Image 1 (spheres, rainbow, N blue to C red):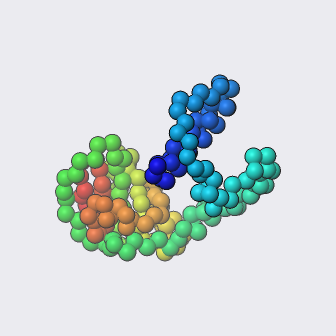
Image 2 (cartoon, rainbow, N blue to C red; image 1 turned 45 degrees about the vertical axis):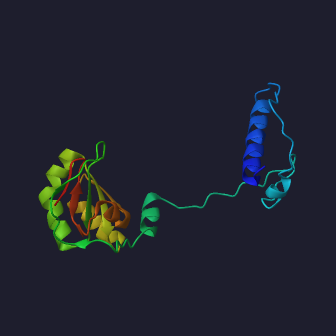
Length: 177
């Protein structure tokens, strides 16, 4: 028998056995073709004896408050994005929450002020994709009062949507500036 199939079968049997035992139902073996023990494959995982005392839980790291956690994420750099012109194009992303990408630069600040009402109406969420400090992020939030702005790299999104520049608004139907 192929060792991989054998391991999968033993794993399935082990899972079924554990489930059956926990459900207090008797185990019914439908077919047993014998074979070699899979124990050598599991020993490298360092299995613990059934009645071993579980290790003491490790305390969760202390982050402090949300502002401390956010400050720890700064600075944010999106290497694939820079301020610039964005051409309007149609996309199909039904169910996508409208979002926008901005940075800590003059073009983004002006865009936020011009588009603030429309962004509110759309309930768009903002990602600040290039920002150096908590003070710069706070200033952007002041300009975009009432909008959610979170620092985050935009590189993955840029790659997926073929973006090179920001500020940009992304809705279920299009990409636009």
